[in-house]
Length: 364
Image (cartoon, rainbow, N blue to C red; front, top):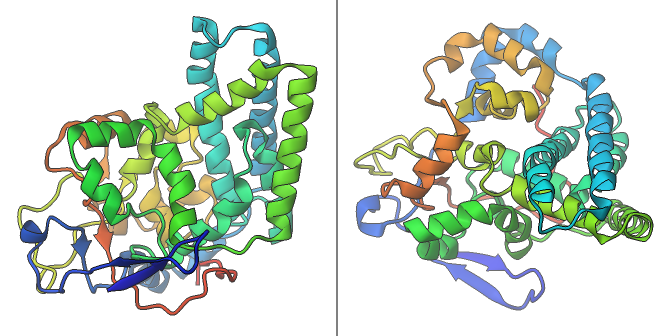
């Protein structure tokens, strides 16, 4: 039995009953529970043993900050262009979907790079630049993302600490075609709000700066350009996490789209729980498709993930991979075998205070 503390009502405890380790998943219609450790730490040790020089790939990528500046500038330019264009026009929608959503997905994942301190050497500089990067999203996001995301890396699959996992309540309600279509359309809200109800993160001065800067910028945009420009930012953020080709990475990274016919957690190793994608959309998304490589070495920047794959190719070439993020969304919605339960999950055994900083997972 796991106890989850409600963020706004600490006295309210949510109890989630875990299945026994030898219970058949077909009977439970539950997550893929396992007592096996997450695979990335194991593979990282094997790769480092065979190719110790991969540590040379670790560290910030100086080009990152300039690309971010260009994308933020592009979004500001389009927002200015749309200042007098009605929201209820094809021009507004198409620019929001084609340019805005793609650019804001790039912004989300730029913040992801910055959360791993991969643009500057000093963590504070990455945090502050992430606040600047946040501007086209329209709402403060960057300061909260980093601690939650580092928990996801350090405790992948943990029922309490990995807030990338759907909750049991989501899985019960949304594991049908209509529910999955709803989830895929509005998944940005699930990823934004789910963490706040699962694991509490301490509010810091970085969060305060993020909120203040974003509010000030939003006020200046509305005052000088009008509400349509701010609406462009927010609508672009929604579309970036909705039915958009680049948003397929959210589902593609850890959902099991080809579930095994049988699974016994007592005797079987868990299904592969991280999947990579090597297609062209990586160009717009900081190579986030190379997700096994990223989880194996979170301190290798986007620009060197292909090199990591090339060096340790035998560790990756036999892993299952996705060919299309668009088809990932389609299969997720319409394949009856694919449910929100299709995630590997681990009973939480860590006594971790999630309000404290979680150390970055490095190459070593």
